[in-house]
Length: 111
Length: 115
Image 1 (cartoon, rainbow over the protein chains, first blue to last red):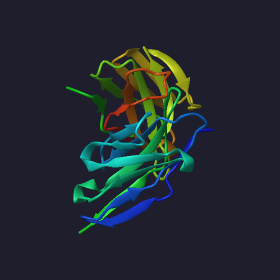
Image 2: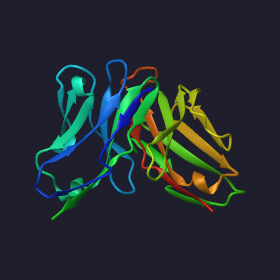
Image 3: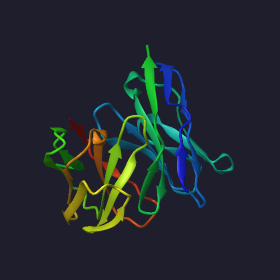
Image 4: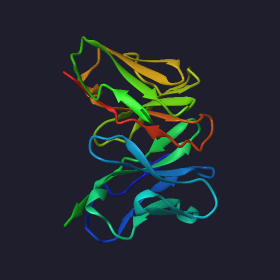
């Protein structure tokens, strides 16, 4: 069965430091991969997506993610974190009719 | 209005009450979804609708009853809920279903508390 694993439940990063959030997927075919962000009290907003082609994808708010088939990973990165990036981040894989989500990683940003 | 709008934003209901959650999308999409977001658990897909027809029911208890009168509106009717049903209920829409490239747009959710 398809699944998504986000190994880190909670990460704290200093403002201005770089960020990497991990995501591993289990999927038999070519995956369609997504990263969403959820700010407190809000719905989910799409950051970026990978369908095919270039394995490094750029998203909104300065985020990027790299698809590595050999590692079944789709890690999210940002070179310099801002305090407003504090939120919960979800990795997801497209499956048939809908999305399968990981449990999420909560990002805290310290000053 | 644009995007996906959910009402109410917050709802407190007793276990014997009947209430409904409403979702409206202004994106011209053909597919709509209900997800449940509980603490410490992944988002759980509940229902999928395509052009007002239910295409997936993800083993959801019958105390949750969805309704999709048209492609822009989706309801979740609630009755005799349990405290463990307390969660954030998210509505989403996408252009189509049946393709794996499902880019979904989410509403802000309804925070449901069952007392």
